[in-house]
Image (tube, rainbow, N blue to C red; front, top):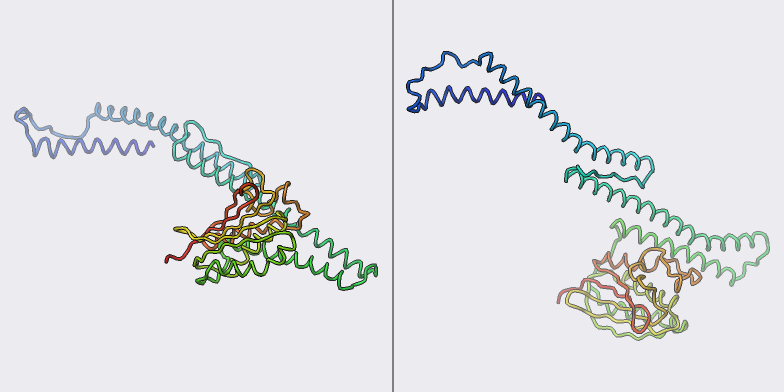
Length: 347
């Protein structure tokens, strides 16, 4: 700041000399100055040098004060961000930078963005731990059953007959389903879920799933009413069938016995797949949580029903991979309506 002040003073003085020499006396001579003799030298005298130095000292003092205040307002927020970053790097994900009242708007925005990023990192770490715990919980039960049953065969306690082997096969299929669902969710979150897109009729895909699952649902006490309107989409037929299968499996596990209505419709912008059941329904506010992985409602979605808690999360992932969305809402007078909204092909 001292150097800047000194250079500014030199430029000011030199500019003044050049102005009077080149402009005032040589190119522009007002009438009032016609009789004024031209000075012998334009070099500053001792009093002028003294005045310049005094002015420079005053300017330097003001510059130092301004620089200190500016640096304090600039450095303190940056130091707060640096300190919080070091704490986060050391493992304290709850560390945050605190803004000061004297901060500039830009540094205050920097602190807010940093704290938002730190909050996102903390939530991601919390969700990752929850995922690990949930996955371990889901895998523990079938693995425990498999280990106990196989150990019984080794010790000669159990006889490996077809019914007992079928129990083991069911547990292996459950493990395979969990692994497949986790793979789909991971690929979808990374934007790498591959789809074999082609022009398909949504109603045709739904009808094929209904024909296959109807006997199983009727055995569980679920009656199906289908109202399918033809609507063309650009999608992966296998994934669409997987979505409907997961929704119907959800009905069988948590809403049976009940009636379920399946509809396909076309709006101005979307193709709609709607599955409406009249089961026990969902608690208030659960519509926004139901598609979260491993989420369960204590009232209607206990682990005793056998689900892994990933089915609806997979439904949402597949819908989003198609450029659509899955939503849940309450049915009247009771129950849940699942709606898959997909982009339709313009006629």
